Length: 330
Figure 1 (cartoon, rainbow, N blue to C red):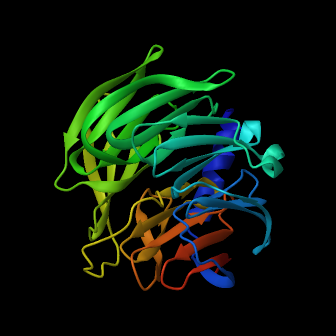
Figure 2: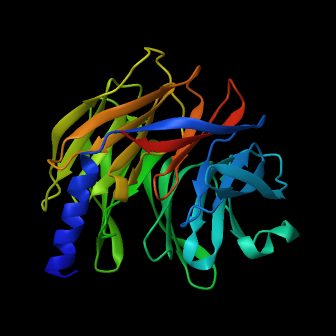
């Protein structure tokens, strides 16, 4: 990136981060089955949701959705979804540990391109920028998969409990993991291998973790009152630099899935805690501010922002609706 491009990006970032915003409810459709995962394709023209053991594919345009395909599943609930944009494909995983790879061009066949039978239910997934590496988190294990013509097992790391959160930095050479254990794991790419290099003790486990800059990440302790913000330096040492106050209903329970999400062009982080979806803005001075909290009836709520940040899509078990919220500046 040239100096002029960098200056333009900084100027744009600064102007965006001073904007006040709100997401307003603009549309909803009935959805009885559980939607644990919601994803957009890269250009936010397509929306895929899990519906218990099934999958629904929608066309998405300016806040309106139209179902265009339906995939019949098996007896096991789907929990995680991930788009592979370069291949026009997506990945689903279910509670029986199966990982399935689907082509958007072959949905009418209702057959996946590949199915991997994993020993444990997948709780979280991430991919690298080149979309040839897949990392999954499950009970007692973090597993790496690589793609040539087909996806295949690369390696795994054993951990003490269930893994519920994974995040990859911008350079694609460091992964952080969190879960039902009181530490954050650091896995680094050294030459061409991934090495578990360090673990940091924390007071309480959590299910959401996110790199939003190269050396800064957010971590949500389980049902905590704050979203914790850390830096990690060249020696892999972490420092707590901010705690963002978030609404807490003292429910003492939350829900898995619905990972933290960062929308760079709008400097927005989407967080989920207990029965709330929380929109947090990154200011030009690096401070994070709680901008909006959308409160639902129960903690079983799941959300995803479109990749341009113009829309938020949510599903909550109590109202059993897919709801669409539109970004508005003020």
